[in-house]
Length: 99
Image: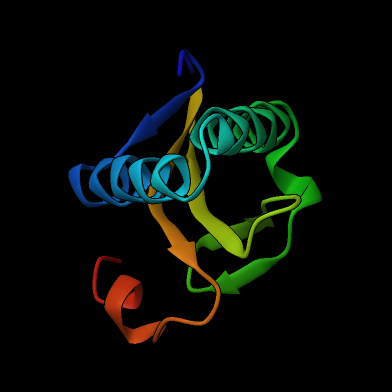
């Protein structure tokens, strides 16, 4: 994943790596597909952060297509900072404590 306009926090990067490995273990190539979808979301979010709704304090969210994941980020010019790459069914209190 190459995202010059996005920085992932340590926790978000760990979630992303874990999710990628899990999807790849489910089916060969699925992890690569997950990475491509997240990359697409982050590119769009970095280009137009205001397009995405504020959901918690200063965080915005973008839903990953095809996967039950949500990316939470905030804008810190000239990039976005990703706080969580999170399964949509998990307890949001986990990522809310990072803000």
